[in-house]
Amino acid sequence: MATLAPPAPTSSSMASTFRAYSLPLILFAAAMFFQLFVIPKSFPPSNYDILGVRMYSSIEEVREAYDNITSACCDMSLFSGTQASELLIPLDFIKIQYAYELLTNPLWKRNYDIFGIDEQMDVIEKVKEQYAGKAFQR
Image (tube, rainbow, N blue to C red; front, side, top):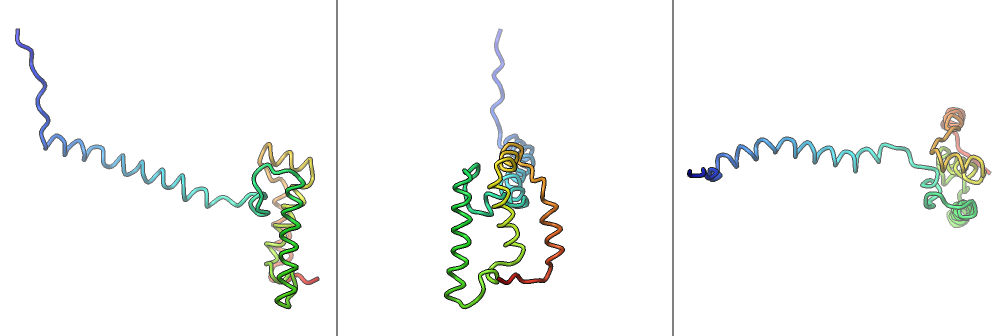
């Protein structure tokens, strides 16, 4: 009995195979791009990002970063002749202050590190509405 050899692939079958898999490959590449680049940018920065420290930093590192931010603002105000609070947009100032308070309170920091839940975000929204269009002055 003679065995039948599989047919040799032809260029038309290769082209049809490429056409069959091209759309799923394009959709897969688009989904990966969306997940890696678009979605992460839509999330608000964490409180660690606001202060410029690495995730799960100690309270001492958070205090040091906050001191660096405030001293940099004070140094810039000395040279430019403007108030330090005028260098920051009021909302940015509120976010920096809020991140500092959240990450220096041991209980709040523990909950934020474990659960990633920012239970007091309504505070920022209320303050943002209260101080809309106003500038802070010392």
